Image (tube, rainbow, N blue to C red):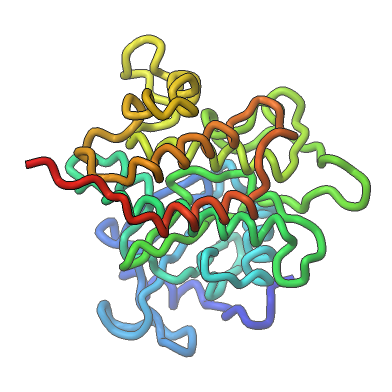
Length: 319
């Protein structure tokens, strides 16, 4: 059931808060439905004028979309009980007749996907990229360790650049928990489930068998880390033949420090830590191991990314 800390909103109030779900309030859309920008009372549920009160993101349930009522409830259950600096904060919900809405904190800079891939976007600097990777890793590590109670692991199952949201100073948070799943308990090695998620990010063993483990998330993290390093999408049919699948194209270069430059985002213009990029490349290579048992745990990934953050060997600007 919804957590008592969550606010319950009236549909009409959210309609007013988003200016009647106006197109210019639209922030984006996902498997769930549309997301609109709105303004509410800091401590209550009343709508406020634009620019006043608390800015929020209001997610509507697309009734014919992939994520139905079950996923909507999963989102409330997971985010209602888990609070962490690297998970997006769920403020409340609305359930009225067939209407299903969720109200989240507003993340000013939008998704990592937009910053990496949108035409005309300013290239993310190296330090911001590593900060984002570390934050996403911390969010996953928290879920895998069973959250605040450390009970059973939670498998996120849908890590991708569009689900990592950025705040003002590039603080990153995981969003969209509709596909999250409780992990195996006791001596079980995996949970079996129908394959959901996003092509290009999903671990090969999960796609083949439906067997889901925390290592499935680690693989997806490796894909996102590769996107962060390269500035290229996981799948892109417009790239030259042999480069459509980013993982397969980059795999030979990741553990070779002398060839890693072929992977690195040219928009960085060489402005990155050589040692840091080599460490990150090797880490991505391990995360993307075809054998899930040989992938690192998220706790180790967090440690390695923290070490990269502390490196001070940034290349000098080219003159």
